[in-house]
Length: 71
Image 1 (cartoon, helix red, strand yellow):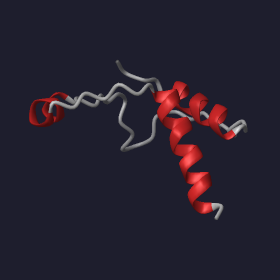
Image 2 (spheres, rainbow, N blue to C red; image 1 turned 135 degrees about the vertical axis):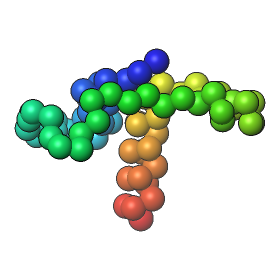
Image 3 (cartoon, helix red, strand yellow; image 1 turned 90 degrees about the vertical axis):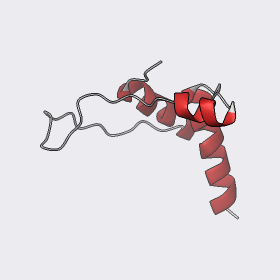
């Protein structure tokens, strides 16, 4: 199901342990109002269906990033 941008930002804030500085603006030229990822072709080609929730995936990425770049 679609993930709202603010939910994604909240997941990043939670994983990073900081609050983002947000500057809400009107839509800008070139902004996309809404977009959805469709993983049906991936599933049809490989049988793989993503099952990781956004918060889990963001947390895992942040953990990996910190581990990799803080060597």
